[in-house]
Length: 264
Ligand code: C2E
Ligand code: MG
Ligand code: MG
Image (tube, rainbow, N blue to C red; front, side, top):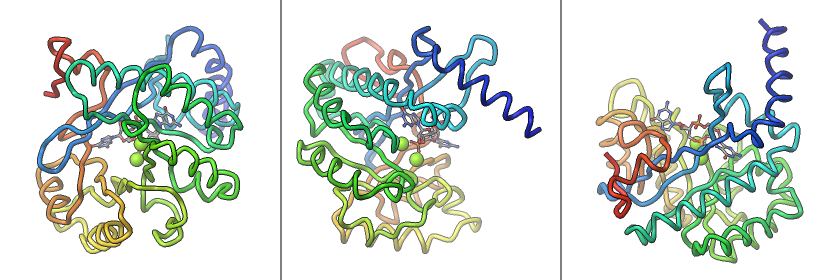
C-alpha cells in the first residue's frame, strides 16, 4: 500500500504542475454563520478535478503543492479569485460579507506575499476588513521569526487573521498572544459529538472563555448536527460552520437570482 501511495503521490505531483494551467483547479465556498443564524462570510476551499481520478481531496494535494512550491502561484490565484468573488457578492447585495482564504506556511514565508495580498485587494476592490486569512498552528510554529512580522504588516492593513484547526497542534492560546490573530476556529474534532455523551464540553468551554478574554472571536468548525449547534451556541461560540449549515459548493450555486446571495 505504501508503494502504491508513493507512486500515486509522485504521479499527482507531476500532474499538479500542469493542473492549474489546464483549468482543473477550482474554488468551492462554504458559508459561515453567526450563531443567531445570519450569514457572515464565505470560506474559499480549493478543489482539484482530475480527469481520470475524479476529485482529489485537498488533504492529499495541498501538501504536494507545498513541497513543490507550486502553492505560491496557486495560492496567489486563490487569493485573487476569492477576493473578486467576495467583492461581487458584496455588490450583489451582501455588503457585510467577509471572505476567508486559507494560506500555507510557504506562502507566508514568500517575500512577495504581502504584495500579493495588497494586489488582490486593489484589483478586486475588496476592503481589507472584508478579508480573513486562515493559518494553522503548524504554520506558526514553523518559522515564527519570519512569519510574525509579515502577519503583523498584513493585519495593519486591516485584514483579519484566523487560527484554523485550533486544538490539533501544540501551541497554547497564551503563546499565540503575541501574534496578530483575532479569530479562532475550534477544530471539528472538539465539536463532533458535543451535546451527546460522546464529547466532553469542558475543553471547548475553557477555550471559548480564554479566547474571549484575549479578545478573539470564536468559530466552531464542522457542525454536523442540531445538538452540536445548540451546544456550541450554549458555550458562547460566536460563529459556526459545517455541513448542517452549508456544504462547500461552487460560487454560482449560492446566487439564486444573481442579485441576492442565498444559502439554502
Ligand atoms: P480547513 O480550512 O479547516 O477547512 C475545513 C474543511 O472541513 C474543509 O475540507 C471542509 O470541506 C470540511 N468541512 C466543513 N464542514 C464540515 C463538516 O461539517 N463535517 C466534516 N466532516 N467536514 C467539514 P476540505 O475542503 O477538504 O479542505 C481541507 C483543508 O485543506 C482545509 O481545512 C485547508 O487547511 C486546506 N485548504 C483548502 N483550500 C486551501 C487553499 O486554497 N490553500 C491552502 N493553503 N489550504 C487549503
Ligand atoms: Mg480554513
Ligand atoms: Mg479547519
